[in-house]
Image (cartoon, rainbow, N blue to C red):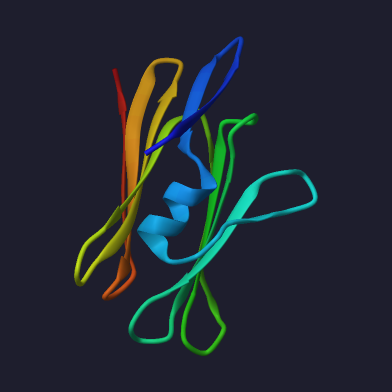
Amino acid sequence: MTWEVKADMYGEFLTPDDEAVYEATGEWPDADESGARVLTLHDDTGQSVVFSYDAVGRSVRIRWVNDQGVGMMDLFREGATRLSFTSGNSAKGISIEFHMGECTGSLDIQVTPRISVSDRLLFS
């Protein structure tokens, strides 16, 4: 896996290159007007997650939409330090690590077979 590193005065955000994202998810990320990478992933029940990440801004956004198109969650967070994708026979997932001042944490998104989100942000 090849990592792209974007650094600023606050730290760096390690993100996999587009080919590694495709290998893990089966989807190529698109770019939005600001340059952020955007993926739309679907679970086995018809729900979807629109996941975007901006390596320069060290930010991520997760929008979860149910099978009827109703927004279930919209989360935006800055301070991301590492992004990784997991893929197995029956499950796909996204993991993001964060460091923001005195807080560290992780955000784990399981995409298949069903969408679930686990978020932890703690004082270091």
